Image 1 (cartoon, rainbow, N blue to C red):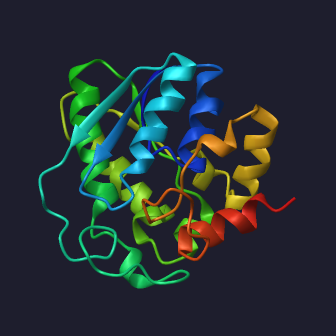
Image 2: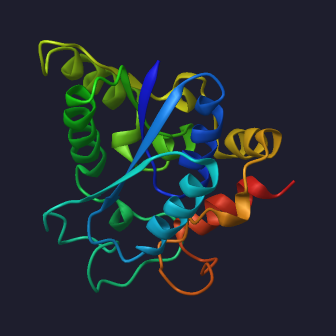
Length: 200
């Protein structure tokens, strides 16, 4: 199977890359949508380069303008509604699907997990994933699959972290923080969820 994986450079997408690479041909796509934590793309490039996996970097137009992860709004501590980038996953999955169909991929994959779905990110839920799967069956003459194995297997962030350790994922190379500073802030929702998951 030939799969195009949405790659953010974070723990989830990197772990999914390591998981899928064991039995499939994988290429990755990383998105620049104006995020403050653009540093994640540098991590994605490094991880893919180390694995010898082709990475496509895609710059989206300036459509995300009114949320804290894009622009100058302060990033709140912990999980917060302002961390939701409107329709981001649908835009990225649709863009990746268009590319994937043109280049004979069988599926598009992304690393949403159960904590994302339950933590206020509706575009990581089972309902959203099923709706996207249905749409992708009819978006072209050739149907294409959507893989979201962490959701399908009811895996939490902690479960993903356990799998990452098992697969030998270079966890310290991944980046989850919503801020693009030199070191993770430790206070944003992404940092808190990651730190809790990695606590062994």
